[in-house]
Each structure stands twice: as C-alpha cells, then as structure tokens.
Length: 146
Image 1 (tube, helix red, strand yellow):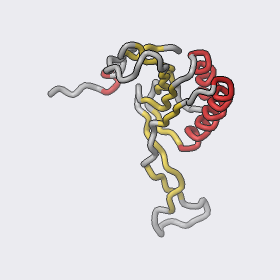
Image 2 (cartoon, rainbow, N blue to C red):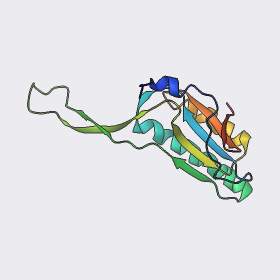
Image 3 (cartoon, rainbow, N blue to C red):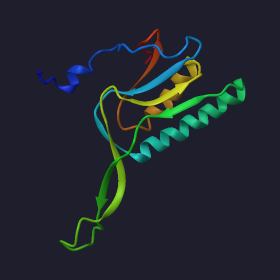
Image 4 (cartoon, rainbow, N blue to C red):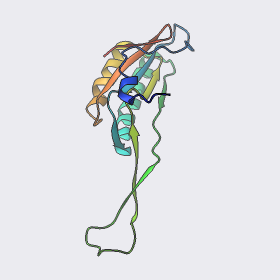
C-alpha cells in the first residue's frame, strides 16, 4: 500500500460521516486547522469561557446543553531548574501536552443556536495558539460555518 502524506488526506472541506443524531439537535464542532503541540492551559482557558457562555444560555432557555472536550494530554514534559548543574538526571514532570492534528475535533457542543456557537467561537479563538474552524453536522456531512 502506498503511503500518502497526512496533509493530503485532510484537505477536504466536507467530510462524510454517518448520521447519528436527529435533525432537531444542533451539533457544533470546533475543529483544528493545523498541526500544533498544545499545553493544558490553553484548553482549560477555553473550557472556562465555554462553560460561562453555556450558563448564560441555559438561564434563558432552560434546555440542557452538552459539551465535550476531545483532547487528552498524555505527553509528559520534564524540566529542571535553571541553576542546576550538569548531570543528575532528567528532572521532574512539569506539564502534560498534546499534539493536535489537522481536522481533529477539539470541542463539541450540542443544543445551542448558531449565533451563540459563533459567539463562543470568536471568544475561544483568541485563547488558542492554533487556528480552528466551526463545523455543524447536516445530514451526515460536516458543513463549515466559519
């Protein structure tokens, strides 16, 4: 089997997926558009913004909002103090990081309107160090909103 570079595989704008949800549910996906090594603090800052906005929406509509984070931080990064001498090991684990690929789903939110999804998108795009796009699921296809 011939190897194909990963960027070539994910250049499509619309991805075909089986439809698992009903039409009444509005699913919005925040999808990365570049490969990037990210820290846990970026996702945590975005999570705080999203939960704050969902609390505001829930107060108005009384409908349950579902929110998922699809990133797992499994790469440990170690660090030694700046004043330590050479040798004596690698150092303690400082942070955990994750490598985000092109077209990987970062966040998924269900039961919100398109205008509130766009507002959340604009707020969290400034917190992340990589570019994201907003997609929705229509009849089994991912359709780009922003």
